[in-house]
Length: 394
Image 1 (cartoon, rainbow, N blue to C red):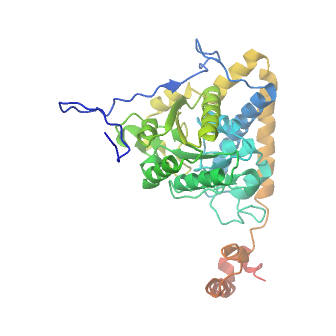
Image 2: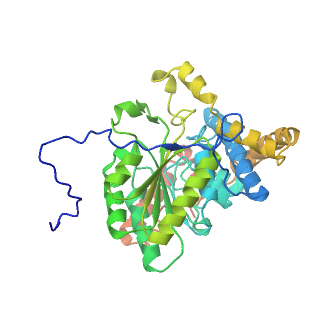
């Protein structure tokens, strides 16, 4: 039988349903909570320098998150988002990539950014939106971006980066580049229309993109079991005709291995792959969220035993690559360095007001220039309401 509909046709003679739970995707686990390997598991081939860079990045992000959430509570920055409990997912996946693979993040992937080389000063400049910020102060905190290290600037609306990643990866293929694009998003963003459009586009046009879904249990306050009844997110990829992997997102060795495998497949076949990371969001959704309103302390404590940093630390110590005493000293040093950098960045001047309209067009159009002129006139009229900006208009 010819098949113009591109669907597999198997003939039956009595009607029968295919159940929604017919496809069960297993979860890759390599590292136990005590730092030992599961029976039959094989650790990926990591050299000591890479393994320690992965660990140092996770620890840096944990300390940065701790310090900057406190800074937000003190009123020093306006907003913050932690990746507490998901450090292994973002760092392990970034470590498996080439430095010129494009990263399109959602907003909880500061681990991938740090692994690529984003400096402490660059983090602070963005968080304080000062004149040294690469984004010229036009983004809210944690909306990072860096052209130099192939990290696309983050957008607030959920899911926008998913079809963009499909298009970018398709362009990589057309240009003959031996690189892929990784696109991070949460399971809540997988409920957006852009998710379905982006995956279908990548599958049909054979774009070498890795879709990395962080299924952390909650879309802000909505638990996963109120978002969908299917077997997570990975099974949706199969429906679009692409390969899928599910991984323990608190197991950095498993995340690294899964991402390395996905990258190799994407480049060898020019086909997309979806990875679903299962790792509980230990912190609040953001500094504006209070998780006590929708989940219990007991639930949080249960998952806290699954800490990705502790698990990986034990494995490194067992291999003789990490000394526990030195590790504690490093954490204290980091706390000092981050606090010192914070104090410097918060005193740096804000960007000039002209940057509100720069980079929109090669040359500001008359309408934008008029709006800027009107704004300056308003500030001059009410200088007491804008004490910092009023003196820097010319």
